[in-house]
Length: 310
Length: 257
Image 1 (tube, chains in turn red, orange):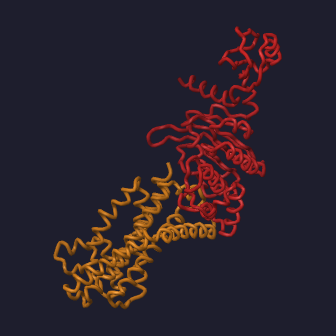
Image 2 (image 1 turned 180 degrees about the vertical axis):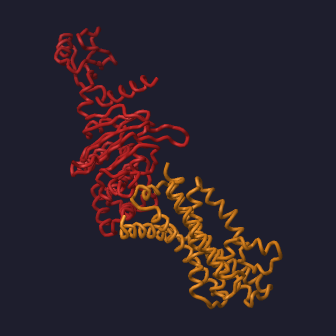
Image 3 (image 1 turned 90 degrees about the horizontal axis):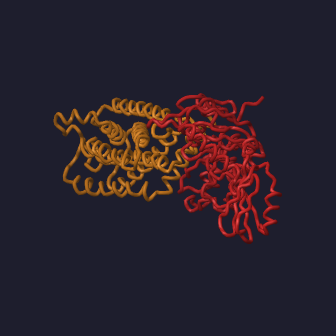
């Protein structure tokens, strides 16, 4: 059986100022997975990614990439990783083509191959027309895509994306996900951190939620979403009844003159709700989920963790 | 990593450093040339003509090796400290830190880049000097190796400075308060034989004295210090500073949390 793409055992990190960022986390990511690593700001996600990419020294525990220890065999482990960091970290005065070719050079990839790969990935990420301009002239979304192209230069087996779509418009975000999904489909394991939870829900098969340096949930996306037993809907109505009807198992709330909110168990059917509303002459013009399902679960898990800690 | 992979990584850093030097040539090459031209005009021509000879050479001929070595030292130091600190400041040093490249490759790449700048500026200053005086290099090998070692010592020192630096002020402090006084007191403009005690003895703890005099011996064939001692001092500094830089890189001082 092949080694996991990522195996983390009892990983700990205490910074010099005494902040305990990771309190002994253990995690396994299988090869080929598209894995979401979620958590609120300051939860320890970036510290974990820092340790995996050798930018942060662990205080204790072990991390292995495809069976190679990051601590004991750093060079071999780094050959397997591509990192897209949260913050922009390229020379703004260099050209995208040079940034990519140089990055390949740091991995020992010759200039000919590096130049071919740079052209390939810059084209795939729709940056080729900017390849010979100074990187500082690129827009925010282009800079993010440049970091993805750069991370692909060593064609890593494990691609780590730390909030890659922060501040990127929806169109570019979708094109970025298309690219990353294709990379994943071709066999690259992807670990993603993001605050756009609908992205994680759509893209990732497995998930870990980290808070205060501990894993509070680690399961498949399907399992996690099945735990959500209550769903909320927003109903746009043509006219509001004078008095809200009472429906068993459904909590109705008036938001404004043309909007109702309905909360009910996931097992509860919608027919009874629409039946009663129709009886009362309420015309529903449209309906949508109040919040993203994963977002709801995420908030619950994190809040529960904090209540336990308190 | 295999040797050939390391060589590709090393070549990448050197190419990037040299490209930086040529890209901003108005900051890296022209200012030292202008400064040294002024030194030649003021100290060599105007003041020097009243000083007479030193060790059998005109004052202009005597100060040329010192001024060339001064350019090499300050430019090697300035190149690596600003380039490496700039990479830290803009965080693109992380491109190298997350790569499989060993620390010695990163250090060597930056040092070679800085030595290149020092040598290019030194050559430029030497060419300018030829407009003011005649020079015939006496010992080519000594000239070559003194340039190489002098530039390497101060490239390594600049790298260590940049490792510790947290802000741009920190890389400006050492040249202003350490490098410039040591250079001026390192026998660039005079022979330390002119100094009485305790200044003569005190001058001998200044490492720049050995670099300037080794180079002067290579060019003019005269020196205030024993040339073998001068090379031993330079080699000791290269070894010592290399060990310090590699230990700092291994610990990730200022680079890894």
